[in-house]
Image (cartoon, rainbow, N blue to C red; front, side, top):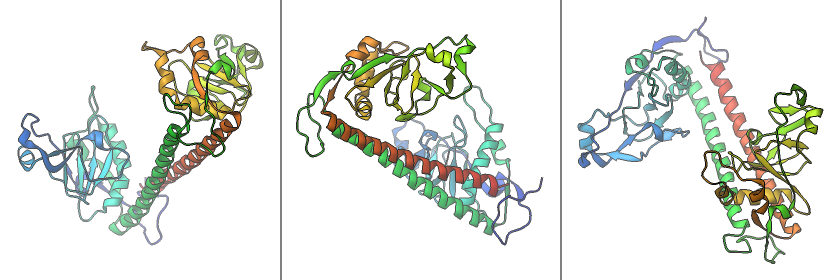
Length: 401
């Protein structure tokens, strides 16, 4: 196998070189000062644990800090900022981050202090390959761990420094693009949560904090059974193959198929005979999960059947999207009716009797359209985010050996 990437910048040729990880970096573990000695803690030195290393790229502030004495009296090591890649080496292996402040870690790390002849951004991007190799060498029954000896002797392939810089800069820009897009997604989701609180009445109130112009009447308390026809789903016999089909004509929804405000397809499909044995719903019904995964709610944009874990409302003179978002707003109150048994259940009688506040149909439609547009915005931004992640994944496969 030649050590040449599929995709390469102009001006670079020749095979990449195989190196042991310790030839590119100083592999540095961590330690924990005695927790019984308060003199070792609450200083000004960062001390990271693996649980803090998440989807962020840069790390500058740890949850806990140690003192100079704690550093001296433990196996913790001070890691240089702007030269170090944090790398978790036990339990969850391969979570990574770049240090922007001098810091220490506990013993759940084998961090890479990158040598001057290697590019930090390139090595950071290479860590996906390093992670996969580390996982294959990890051991342990309670939790997986890779030893320093095994880790530092991992073989990796690297090009000359100038090519490393080119690759590192490109992937760093893509990482920045992903982070910016993730922030936009998070902000839009947070905005929706905020508006759910403002556009539906708070406890003991009959009007919301925020309201569209032209509406001022009190909202009215209604049972779900008053909003339209309510139905509990069922499962045609799974032993009878004639009830099931490979064709995707008759959709049969379970909670695992609900992954957003709109549901359009299912894992399993019914035959025409199975459809006759099912509970059938027209499009734009409101599906409310009422067993186990309580709180997974959606609207079906095509006619569907549902299983027994889902109660549904077929709205009559009420807006589907308003009901959906009202149930999302009421999620904790609805879930509290399920009790504390191993499998949470809200039965049909309790479901029918659950009450929500309802404004006029015109106001319902205004609110429903507002949240529908907001959900479409979230879905669009999430799709763009996934496209950036796919682009990075493709480049990692094509630009590395």
